[in-house]
Length: 272
Image (cartoon, rainbow, N blue to C red; front, side):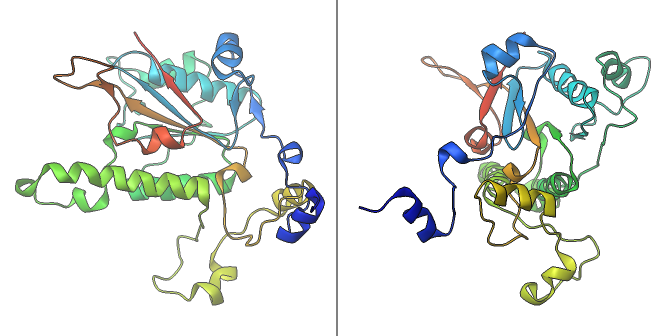
């Protein structure tokens, strides 16, 4: 019978067993009950995806802002992808920036990139992960639109187009978890990847590769990134809606299909 070390040598991953895997970093929040009773890990774990869903005005953006402030308080970097443009208002009627500041968010250091389509949003997320951002919030996932639907003819809308967003979200989150590559913005449209990836593609940082190697995790291609290679948590904020005509069971559902829920380590539901 083969020993564990012989099997690991056969697949070329020395020490890559459950007891020796590198522990993912944990960032505690200011909410002890959330850290110990909800998460049971002491806080948000880097390298993971979380879904935060709730009805309207239940406090989704408030909890998300608290996470930003807690990360910034220990010197980490936060990014807020506001697809609804709700946190970009600074008027007397809706001073969202002032509300975020009252929660402890340093809005001057908060990265707020603008995104277009759903595909563009995932491209921005990948660049932020590789750049070293520690927490990324997408508020909200439900309003993302695939690029093809943005330029569609409004008279030709049909119900099957609802599946377009589900397909994009499935592909995007699969890439974040399973592996993706990042290219420079000025890369040419058509290039030979094998010949020019060293010139155009961003490799995994050497210190992270050394950390993985130290724990026996071999990365065969240093140009393929994965979310758990980095200390980065993704918060996907989503709506909670009720289906009409449901008499039995939970009528609550979240738009955009089940891709975000399937890829989330924890789904955080909120009520008013």
